[in-house]
Image 1: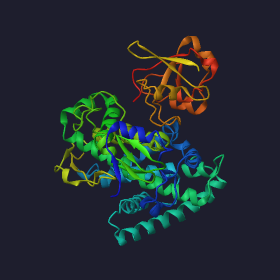
Image 2: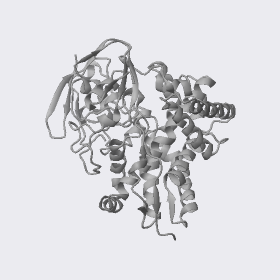
Image 3: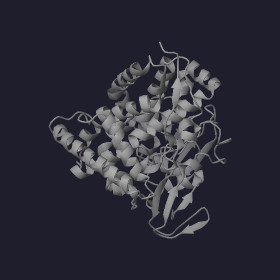
Image 4: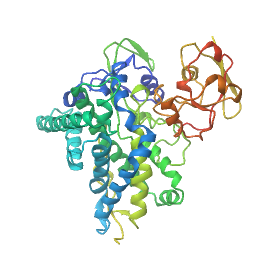
Length: 356
Length: 107
């Protein structure tokens, strides 16, 4: 892959806190599908874009503005499947939930459906991890990005006249407003990550608990533990396994001197299992001592969706699913459907329960 | 250069220098003060550089700014009237001798 891999916790943290050396401005597949965007910018350009987009994702906004709608959507999705007694919790619940939360609420893309968003996200993410250069995957990704551009352009016009508190509206009305193309590209990034990352944390965490009934009982008896389940799930199988950086200068790290221009991969999947930091790192243990994990990244690019994801998954999705669907159990081991190393999660999670 | 003191949850003190014009969080991170995590590197996005300003110095340090005030509702350790995010405290000569207490948890 032509990259040096940083796999230890301390080295990854070090690199994340030195963005002037470990630059985000790297040519690559993300730029091909999405175009220039804040994930692949350094400050001050990154800061301008992030500051414009971020306000609606901050925790008080999530709690005061979005939480009610998130919860209604979650109940509606569960109402649809509750009588069936079986479902794929990824396809039938988590993905439509996070897509609706993201598109219809947070981004303010009221001119799209949750299904559109989920499909666009999949097509783009397949493109972003298309290291095999499959032309069909590129074509589908390009169709998705064009559809997003059209939907965003329409909402930019509408929110210019009527601000609605959404991320698009925030970008339109920022003190340093963004160009249309900048808004379009950054919405693409949010749709890409905003669907699969919370979906995958939901799926992996639910799967981990279904296979550990004793832990599940403990959590159900002490709902304050859902937060620990979230952080431990994000550590144990972080939904982003690695991301790239490129060196702006010669630099020595971990005893190796890398030359300017070297491509580097920060391997979060490895750093989060570093035995020097996390004892019995391969085990899923909600009671382990609290140490910060790397799943949200660090430094100026610290995950913008962190507070949204924490709320929708740990305060909402898991407690509702395990609270409403009685006698929930997996129908198979699901282990063989744990895929990916850039983006990682279960592709499906089939379960049964006692239908009402 | 101003000297600032971090009192850790176990009662030990870390005395470090902090350059004027930087922020308190940087003094902690560059000196490896345990318990100041600062995941987001100083952008008030993560709430993991939380400190309690010592009672003697709260007026001198002043209240949190608007963005910080919001984030302080979501710290891992309880919010108190003296809570601040150390990435939002600008170091100046006036803060020489500042004492802050590091909470038990940041994540």
